[in-house]
Image (cartoon, rainbow, N blue to C red; front, side):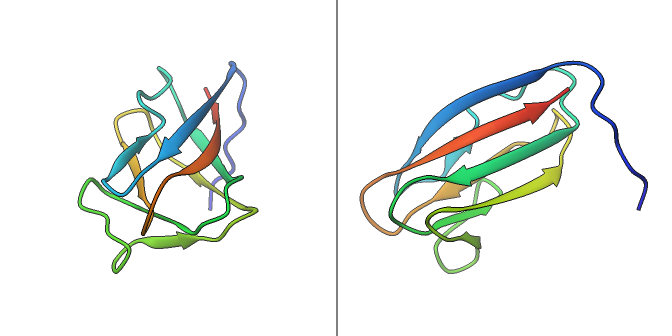
Length: 93
């Protein structure tokens, strides 16, 4: 795998993920190459496309994080089974 070095800037945000697919973040940082998502809430957040559900999404447990090499043309979504859950996002450009 080719290593990507972030040479530009960082953008941080907070997203409240609900029971409908929620964009993480609401809008991608221009030129994004990397995204890290930390689940700081008490529920599992399921990650995926705009059609993500709790049955098909990638599970991100409470108090855990995940990162992806993800360009700014791709939107990551999250969903929870009930209520809402806060995630923190760090994007590298």
